[in-house]
Image 1 (cartoon, rainbow, N blue to C red):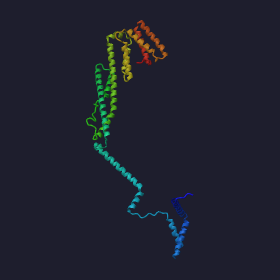
Image 2: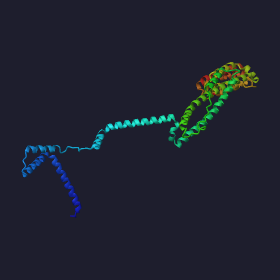
Image 3: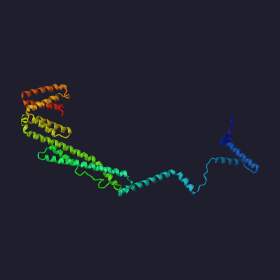
Image 4: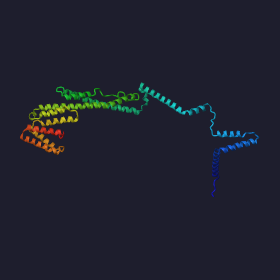
Length: 374
């Protein structure tokens, strides 16, 4: 058998003795009747050995009272501070409530104080703004100044265009163009939109609290100004288109080189009426393009210094080209080609009136069916 170190043996014995002692104490506490009887018997033996008179009932009563209070906690007497500390800890839930209430009151007071200080003196919070914040506001102010300068130039450009169109519309005013120009004038920003914010007074800690909200307000106003300018610009563009077409028609009808073609153009009034109706309803890109397309077609059909039959032959060729497009369904292509052959027959006979009527009728039919694209 290998030798066991004495130190290990002693440690093991100490641990075993401790366990025995704990077990003994547990057994003593668990077997209360036996424990009380042993203590009472020892008390009697002590009294007998010392010739002291005793009463068994009194011994039993004393032993029972000792065991009744042996596991009860008896608080030691406390001095003033200890008593206050115990009372405070005992009622700490109430203290948390009042502490929280006081903290909230102080926080609200501080917020009110700081806000009041800011309202009375915006420079009060200058120390709270970092250099990065100053640079950020300065850059934003520079962007606003640049945007406002560009916007001012565009507004000035459109205002000059508006005045020019109003002047050109005075002698022979077009009612619908006048409405568009009036609407554009109302939408056009009146005041000078330029600003020198952040330039006349550079952004610093002393004024950033004042300049930043002004910059934000100018940025918010930007979209409204752009929308107003776009609306005015659109109305000006449509009004210009109407007036230019009106002037073009006037010059075309007075052009001596077109006199022969005009004299033989049997459907001229119908074409002019169609164009007039389109010009009275120009309120979008498509309607504007429709009117422009009709005007170009009329101008092409009345090309100067050309015989009417020659112009009609060109228009007939254009009709044939459109009939050959894939957009025209096969089921109606044959019917349209029959009409096209009738036009060719009239042109061969030299009957410009009959050819003009049939060309105009077929053109309108294609437009109504949606097969006449610009």
